[in-house]
Image 1 (cartoon, rainbow, N blue to C red):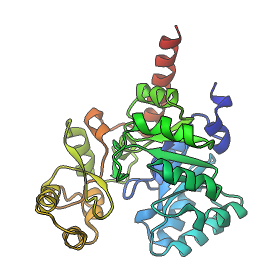
Image 2 (cartoon, helix red, strand yellow):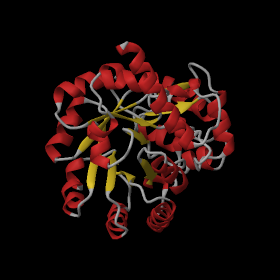
Image 3 (tube, one colour):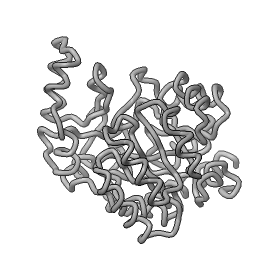
Length: 314
């Protein structure tokens, strides 16, 4: 079955499982491990200086002969440099997010690069299709990190996007095991993108304190916040509490930006500052109980998907 899957064909991978390109978590070690296991690993360029990205691409190439990609937030300040490095280093797959896909899609495709764009509503899915991207990721409200303002859950979003566009469709948000993967596929997705599981993996570049916080997370321990800036799902801590108080008191975008400051996500996710850091993670964190190798996570996702599918088909 996997050989017939449109996502597996598009990326030339074994399983239609994509690792999220998460800032401060998705370095070359994680991307290479996921790709080696048969999924598609992504390097998260959003937290990298251009020359750091170049080094991660080269390290990933040295670690695996299998396809991998780079995730690029289109609001990145030095994006021209990032894109030039991606071309120079021969990257074949780019996931774009947080911006207008029309800006870079043709440039990348003219260089032989497959382009996937991340969206959270039908309006931007249609814009991505119009821009000519090769596939889209539809990310539901459950997802960690930056998120859609509409708060549309994956269960509602995937069938709406499937009905709206003809592009290959990857579901994201709340994908924590094979059952969720099967549900996403039943709703119309062709594959899944998984973030939080891999954020807590052995190969994730996140700080051990952050990984342990993911494991300790319970139901209700994350919230979508900072909607007046860019909506982001955060794990509860002192910083998140301060944001909640500010928002309840009617803080405007400028006041929230001042509270957020700079390097807040790096302090939390990468440096392990659990009180004042910005801890971006999805609702599925409440299901994560152990730190596992990325290859094991890929295998468990696929085996769980196949097993539950067989059970339902009888």
